[in-house]
Length: 115
Length: 116
Image 1 (cartoon, rainbow over the protein chains, first blue to last red):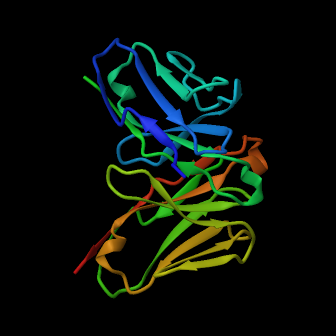
Image 2 (image 1 turned 30 degrees about the horizontal axis):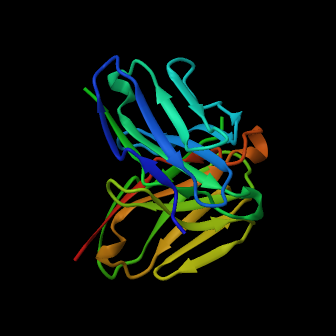
Image 3 (image 1 turned 90 degrees about the vertical axis):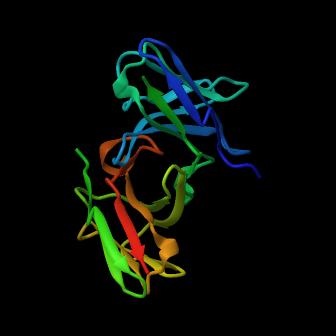
């Protein structure tokens, strides 16, 4: 059973370009979460999605960031007009239902470097 | 604002020694997580603690939860080099802040280095 799959693992973008990060949840999981980790920091929640729905985007920056989880295909985190401060590791996680005591499962992360 | 504080943030210890990492959080929550992260890698789930007095053990690691004190501990027994990593605790924000499931508040992590 494959885990949470993220790609690309490493991405370099120049300032002003767009970054697209993809996440395929674990098989059987319908809930996806995106987190950002700045260097030497803990993870910060960004957004929680179910298929075709954004449930909680309270951690998403108001501008330039968007996320989707279409009916078919992976979840996408999109960052437009990237700036140096966007350089971070972006982790996707998934779960079936969390309140049965299950944990959520994290992917390997996508490391974005803005030059 | 729900805050999660870990201490120490850096820990250097010798093999064979015992130590405890502390995780304090600012308000009640119904579940607490411990994760391990190796450099450049993802987070590995270690423990999920769901109730007051919960204690879980896996190998040389033991986690406990005191919801009244809003404190969780991760105890390391007879450390070995393979335990070198960064350890995070995280608290579910939903219980008191109306956050959604999966909206976990993480501590800054404890970077553990075990030396021979």
